[in-house]
Length: 638
Image 1: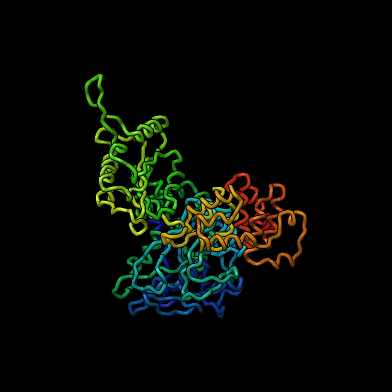
Image 2: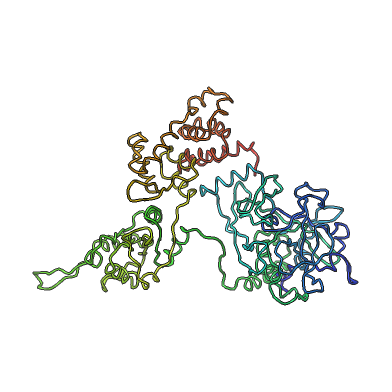
């Protein structure tokens, strides 16, 4: 029998010893209550928040209990549950906020891993098997991980975890998978999950003592799962409930106790055990015969769980663009004129061939025919853009080169028609094929964003993969830190939380947008005069920017020489703290640690801004910042 299908839930007989059946020996010692992990709370699980019931030898917050499912019917068409106090109860089969406390019933796994036992609660024996996101690390680690994530510096391990994205109170919605990537930092691994609790938007507390509410992004550490050992039945039972948010049974008919037909069982087989065991070190503890049997079972189960061998996980806009380019699929980038569509293309291919279709003519796109007097015949001449593209592609045949049709929605319908033929056939003027390593990307404004935009013809629209670009404040700040945007502008946008990244365009006065701020940065570097910016972002925003730059600040010399007091720091208002951080980011490498240590007094958000401004994408500086972070955490590993 395939061990992958042996991830299950306990029956009510195994939990309580009812109906003439024996209770698991291990539960006679341990008891029937179950503590739950932070992940259970974050995915909608009920938590006994008042700590009336808890595992008494544990940390008070980690010991809190919740109710869990069994696999048994309650006899009235619903499912039997284990309440937070360990008693039997009936639970509606469509409920989502019960905890999943899985059990493993496989002799192969049991015999292989039960040798490495440790003493547990109330004289029980436990083993570690598999890994899963369980508890939220401390607030300082949360802040550090979030800073690294927003700057794009965290490394994905290639592993991920799949849960249900549906809110706990939505009983009618079928399973909607959401997959969270695993990231590595300093030897430990984490996921970043969006909280979907059963607290109705109110604050709740996790085991790290911090308060959160729905919609917050919370980092959860991946750690080994502990299982209670029951020798008589060769069962391993998760010490705690480890997940919630999974609806037990979607069938409108009453639940008759056939667990194999439930959505819960399907989830356990298809997702949970894969997630639990993707980091398993089980094999090294097996005999050669056990390894052979294990591998045979694992491969068979993998085929059943994922017959097409696909990779499931979230992808970014940039990843979609790159994936389409690698797949020889033409890509269309939608968005307003200031959203950085061209910049995204140039990040992939800085040497791309750009064709501005708004100004294009049939000859500039398709080439032309000229009369050769010597031969007395017409000769077809390739367009200049195609010659350039061919030269690049021929010079480096193993590299992709992009031909970028910009402003395609601002082109006349006749020009769009020529572009369509190139996209459709990868052929110019019906006679010149695009090079094999050439790729097509197009971009245009939406009709609502441009008075001169034309509707894209349906056949042309359908030839593209479509990506909709919207620059976020986080994304812009990350880009700005890597592209030498003036530190005063970076700090101002961060201080305003992105409120002034854009302003409304009225056709009469200048407005702010991401592209304008890039232009403003160049002007500020060249002139050193903030007042100049009113020609780009308008008078109101410029006036506020000037006030921001005029804030009282503690200077770099003051910090290096220690010419400041605690009162000086406390007297700084929020804008002054941002202005101080901006000035201090000009520090050299020799004094960086001292200055950065000072910035920690201004708050974690200011530390993140200092790091971004000071490193400016420089690898050697990034390494120094990583060392400084560890020093500020007291040198302890996280």
